[in-house]
Structure formats: structure tokens, C-alpha cells
Length: 264
Image 1 (cartoon, rainbow, N blue to C red):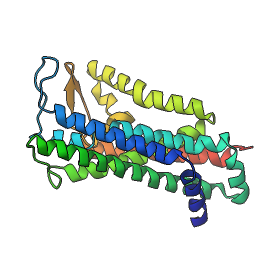
Image 2: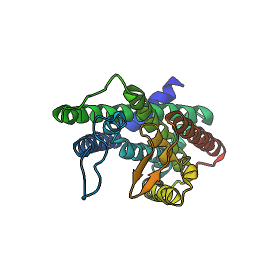
Image 3: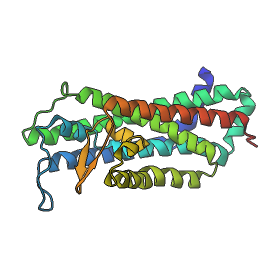
Image 4: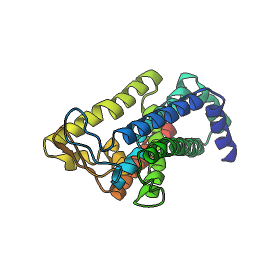
């Protein structure tokens, strides 16, 4: 098993994919944290002022502002890690070297979860460093050890790691790497948030709460309102359980397909 994990790690770290995505994670986390901290408590577009930095929920959202993009990078990593195996035909060599496919699946899951957790750490580290500077300049309290901030940071790391498992499942279901990426990112980042907003607008937000992206938001944010629509979210522990459930189902589905599918 250790050799298989090393092999899976080698597949990732000998390409430019991992650090290219990591750079994207860090840059977007820094940008969104600065934007969130700079605009908190200000009136934008002539409307009512948003909650300020004296609100602990706002501080949590500043530090984890990059999560909404980081999970997409993690999703892409999972998709490419699996679909790329079929595209470059490296899966055949892997199975020939280790015919026990369950071990291959487990080693790939462990590797991707570990790398995804690393992306999560980069997300919150970049968000905290950039956000804390702006908060301090604006005279706000950093709250790094209180008001649920440590919990939100840990859960953000967990969320990014679990999204790699969802990507792995998509890459298993759809062998075409380009198609798998387009569908996964299009649904997770565009279609699903639109559906969630529509469901909340129709006063059935209790359904939208169980969508993966909404469960991810619930880990670090309270229910919010925008454009006259209240976005209903689960409590943080509910979001964690829902996202974990999606990851478990996705991992089991990916394992079942890999164990049965002809890879040639």
C-alpha cells in the first residue's frame, strides 16, 4: 500500500498540474480575502451597508473567502487525477503492476485527500494572512482564537479535501478528461449555485441546503441575504455531515466502477 501511495504521489508531483492549481488557490484566496475585508460594512451601489468587521461571521467569511474557488480547483484536481489515467493510459500499467484494484483505489483516495487538504491549508493560510492585514488596518479585531474562527478554518480545509473525492468520482464516471472537467466545473460552480438561488427565491431553501456547494458554504457562513432573497444554509455541523456523505457516496461509486470496469 505504501508503494502504491508513493506511486500515486509521483504521478501528481512530477507534473505541473499540482503547483499550477496551488498557485491559483493562493492567488484567488488572497484576492477574495482582501476584497471581502475591504468591502465589509460599506454601502455598495447605494443600498444598505453590509455587516461590518465587528461581526464574527464576517471575519470568518473574510478568512475563508477563497473557499468558493478553492473547492473548484480541488474538484478539477480529482477529475484530472482519474480521467487523466485513461487519457494517458497510465491506469493500464498501474493495474498490471498491482492487480488488486481495491488497493489502487484506496491509495488514490488517500493521496488525493492529502493533497486536497494541503490545498485547503493553503486556502485558509492565504486568506488569514491577507485578510488579517486589511482587518488590522481598518481597526477590526482579528478573532483568530475565538468566535468560531478556528473551527471555520479547520472545516474549510476539510471541505477542500472532500471536493477532491467528488472530482475523483466524476473522473471515474466520465473518461474523457475535457468533458469531465467541463461538466464538473460547470455544474458545481455555475449551474448548482443558480439552482440554489432559484430554490431560495421560491421559498424552498430547505431543499437547496443539501446541495454540495451550499453545504460547503454552511461550514463557514450563517444564512445570508442578497437581492431580497434569504439564502438558507444548514448549521456548520449539518453542512459537514452532508458534504462528508457526498464524499463517501462518490468514493464508493468510484471504487465500484474501477473494480468492475475494463480499463483497456
